[in-house]
Image (cartoon, helix red, strand yellow):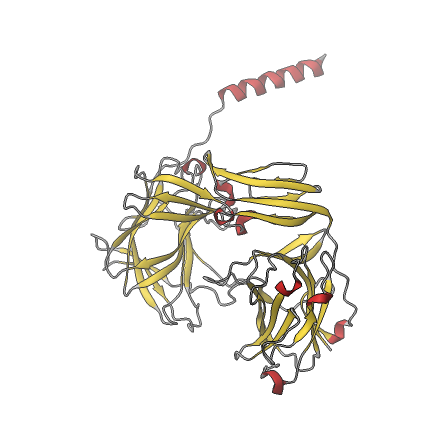
Length: 476
């Protein structure tokens, strides 16, 4: 009886609490820097450090407060962009994060600021929402042109209702001009309710309707699939923001085939076909991604070369050399999406919308003693006309010398790029192990002592758009 009374008492207390609960609210301050920093606390500045994409990192002393320059005032934030040979950092990049609880920004519709440069230049990326935590609501604009006069810039918020506890007030990344440094200033940095931002146009897959094959058990992040939100500003300019997946509401046409988490992680759970669509704040996004999922992924065969005879770049069988990236997203010409993914516990490289892609090593390697470059390649589909397969694999050294090798079409345009694997040998849905001889330097000019980049690209009118790679290594 005592136990029953205790349970009923606890249940009644819990019910009473839920009816009277008060949700935590956060400050609604919009100002970030107006003549001085506003409410960021004492530990607010976090420069980007070295990472896989940049082993040097940003210059930690690039940001300061300038008390002699400002927009209609005597102070501003000053960013001294270093030259690319500065030993302390080859660019300026950082976040400003509130030291403490976040802010409720749901009543605003844009981050605004005034900026000018010591000369005309470009801010590579600038936005908000990065806090070096979950980074849920990052929003960024790219390639912002600077004038030598003060100009106001507007970054619309993709969906203000999401920002009820935001700590990431600013993020930026700026490289020098032709390798040389310059200075720019930011002032009157604040979130505002402008009320004249209209015509929201969200998009995924850069507004295209993509179709891709995949396998049960695979997963990937939609953050690499062109998630944007475009608004029309009062000036008439259409401003496009790169938006984090958390701004979107994703929907799968068949959750028994494909499921999408709120963070944009796509999981292939069963065979079949499913279409992924999205919306922001009830506005349907242009573009979609249709996944045709087959059975279990056919993992690449394990390499048989002895580890003592191998320099490995990407393989679960060997210890790999450090790599900056397997997809540099080299703009503006590269369209290739994707990179590293895990399928059934194995690390795989998966590329879509392919035109060219590169792997960059952190430090150049010496392959003088190696005789071959090996890579496993899987294409889910082949063109009906095999003459529409023409791939070029380039081994490149730090001094710019290279060796080129062709895969596919049975003709040769350049004596430096012989056919090493004919199209007639390729089979859809089967891994092909390509063994490419490392030719004499006299034939190619390749500096074998300093290999740092491996590039694969479509050439001519090649129609290969999606493929998988594994077991990339040099051996003797």
